[in-house]
Figure 1 (cartoon, rainbow, N blue to C red):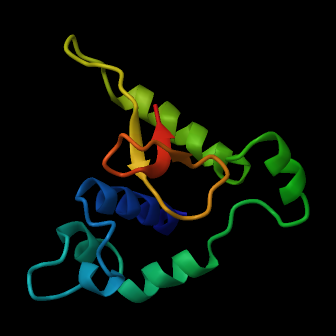
Figure 2: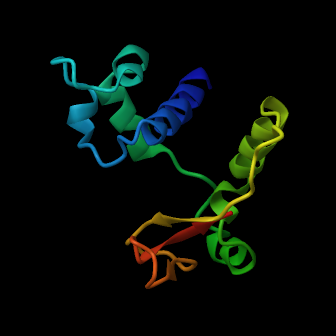
Amino acid sequence: MFEIIVLFGLLYMVGVNKAQHFNVKDLWTSDGSAVDCTTSTISRGRFLLFLRVLRFGSFADRAERKAHDNLAAIRDESDEFKSQCKKNYQVGEYSTVHEMLEAFRGRCKFQQHIPSKPAKYGIKVF
């Protein structure tokens, strides 16, 4: 269980450090250009193994769940993440609520196209 938490934390930190477009091999380089948190948490082989075998939900009821909820496969994890964020972050006086279009060109039922944005295709995050 601890390694799964490490995996999610590492994926989160890779996104925070704007390294999501790096090649996986580049995240573990030893020449000093790697993201610090990757080399000190988990080996590259173990990381790739987890990404290959990690699945949410079962194939048996996938179609039924997706008919009602686009995030059905990860809904429990998403809700837990949101509750932990609310618990551990205090909104300050100068905070704003904003929406953004996270660039994404893969296949997704709820992808949006907004021609006026720099990244024209993506997922709208509120």
